[in-house]
Every structure is written in structure tokens, then in C-alpha cells.
Image (cartoon, rainbow, N blue to C red; front, side, top):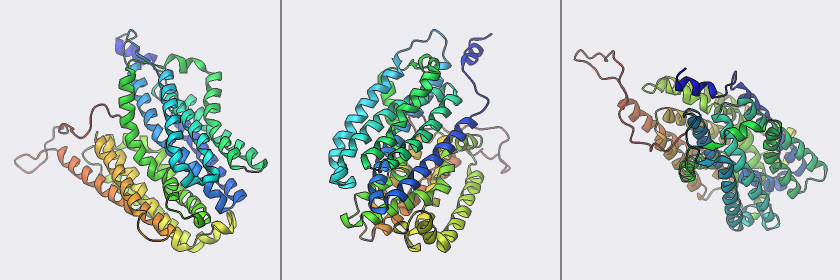
Length: 446
């Protein structure tokens, strides 16, 4: 048996990553049930506080996903090395260091953003944001270890437990009166509980695969780059309600709460499945780097169709549905709801062009498109219009600009890898390789 075969035989395998997809569905449904229950119990004005807290926490969770990407890559690479490869760092130690730094940064920055967005009476919730973020730093690091080792059932267990435990904890908190602090504790407790339960049941994999051949310095450098790209995505998808809260007047809390819930619900049919399929799309695009356009066309066509159907349904029944299912104070007018539905399609298109760029190794262009979309979105919030119009402009114009950048980068890339023509005007039958990629440093891994 060769060294390569021996190495591969040591990599744990699983029948399918369907475990992760099912767990993601369970966690997603649990999350939306949490929002629905809290909205019904609190009303729009008080829900604005919970919505901003949730946005702040999961903005950081989205940024920390960059660490999960890097530890996934680092673990997978380590398993392809010979048995005698030097182990230079412990991912448990790395996770602990990241958790400490993240917690301190959140508390210190919270002195600025918490009173403005959560209100002075709820600014202390920054403590739960900090603790939840620190706990998630450990979860993200070790989830990457499980993904890199292909331990899909273990990873799926963490994802599913996180959602289910959060739902149960929130139900208990609501039963005890729905105090903002109690709800905040209920939201963050699942991070350590889910990881702790998996570790107690099966500790060996998290111990065995947590040693990395990379130095701490390299781990930090690689993670910083993946987190940069993840932060731009998270700002639009997870953190937008937090940013929007900066532009809400004190007497707009009810409208802010209704908008936060409307943004979350109207984008779910498009963004939830697309975010779950990001790795699948990267794999599909990798098979045809020179001609991503047919798949982009089909995916975007499906997004447009879904967006059109949802926009019509929202126009006809949206306001009444929000009033009936959630409460009359969440019933925004059609003029506010339909643009939010349409904007989800623009963000969804970015979630298609992004994997196409990653498949071609265009990491910088991928990140630049999301960063550009985020910057433009924030700029739109300074336009002197109502809060609902600000939200629609920011979530539409920013993603459209980022999408245009992505499409331009894809067009240039497809020209670079196009097979050359022979004298008769026919393309060469022999495969050609892409021109050297100067778009992304080798240390970036998505």
C-alpha cells in the first residue's frame, strides 16, 4: 500500500453529507420558529430589541464562519500528510485564543454600538453578545475540524442540537415572562451545550484531529483573510438589521421591529436554500470553469421566477398574512414588503456568482464583490427617505452593484480560460489550462 493510499484510508468517511443538509434544515426551521414566537409574544416595538440583539450576535457568527472554513482546510490538509508530519499547533488552543479576543473586542466596541442600537436600557445585552460570540468561536473552529475530517454526523449533530436547544430554551424564557436578558441567555446557551453534548458522546475525534501542522501565526493569517470575505457577506445577510438600527429614530422602534422581521421572512425562501447549497454550487462550477454561464443562467432564472411569484403573492396577501399570523403591528404596507421580496433576488444572484468565482480561484474578486455590495448598501442608508425605503434601497442597490462586479470578473475569467482557435476558426480539441491566477493569494481558501 502506498503512502497516499494509507493516508486516505485514515481519513474518516460518511455515506453522505446529507446529514449536514438535514441538520441545517432543522436548525433553520427552529430559528424561524424562535423569531415567530418572540414576535408574537413581544410585539413590534419590543421585538426590535430582540431583532437587533439577534442580528449583532449572528453577524459575528457569520464572520467567524471564515475560521470554520480555514480549520476545515487545515484539518483536511493535515490528514493528507504522512503519519510523521510535525504537529505545530492545537486547534483547541487556537479556538480558546480566538474566543478570548472576540469576547473582548465585542465588549469594547459595544460601548459604542450597544446604547445606540439596543437602547440605553438594554445596552447590557452586549455581555450576552460577547459570551455567545466567544462560545461560537470555539464551535466554529471545532466544526471545521469535524468537516475537514469528514465526520458529517458529528457536525450535523452540532448544527441540529444548536437549533433545537435554542428553540426549547426560548420557549422556557417566554414562559417565564420573556425578559430581554432571559431571551438573550436562551439564544446563546445552545453554542456550548451543542458542542459539549457531542464531545461527551464522542470525544475521540475532537481530540485526535485537533492538532495542525500549521503554526499559530499561519492559522491566524489564513483565518483573517477568510473572515474578511465572510464579514462582507454577513453584513448584508446577518447583520443588516443591526446596521439599520443605527438609522432608526427613537420613535421608530415599532417600525424597526416590523422591518427586521419582514426582512428576515421575505428573504428566507431564496437565501436559506442558496446558502445551504454554496459548497454544492462551487463543486458544480468547478467542473466547467470556462463556461459557467449556462448554470448561472439557470440558477438566476429560477431565482427570478421565485422572486416574481413571491412578489405577486406579497402584493396580494402580504400585509394581511403578517397581521393574521404574527400581529397587526407587524403588518407593513405592500409598498414596503414587495421591494424587500425583490431585493432578496439580487442577494440570491450574488450567492450564485460568488461560488462561480471561487470555483475559478478568483477569491479576491469574490470578496471584492461582497465588500462593494456592503459598502454601497451602507451608503444607501444615508439617503434622506423613510426607514422602509432606506432598507429597500440598501438591500437592492448594494447587491446589484456587487453583482455587476462579479459578472464582470467572471466575463474576464471566462475569456482567459477559453480554448484558442486554430487557423480554420475552430477551437482546439486539446484542453487548455487557465492563465495563471494572480487574483488571489494562495493563502486564501474558501
